[in-house]
Length: 78
Image 1 (tube, rainbow, N blue to C red):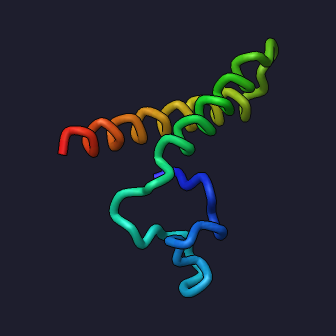
Image 2 (image 1 turned 45 degrees about the vertical axis):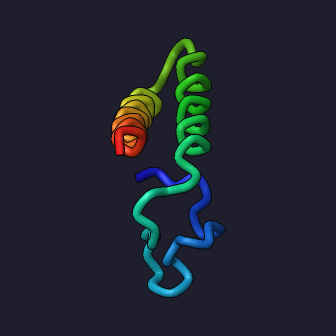
């Protein structure tokens, strides 16, 4: 899952393992992550003549947002 606070989140295992891994099953910052991804999508969509890298990044972020939305809905159903 996309982490809105890598290395600064209290649940990130980076300090111990050197790898970004969330030690908590359900991220308490899910809505923050969603807002950040939506903001990045908005910024990239405003660019009129996108480079190939910007187009790829936009698709990657949309995929992350779709995955995050699925996880948030699944958490609400529980």
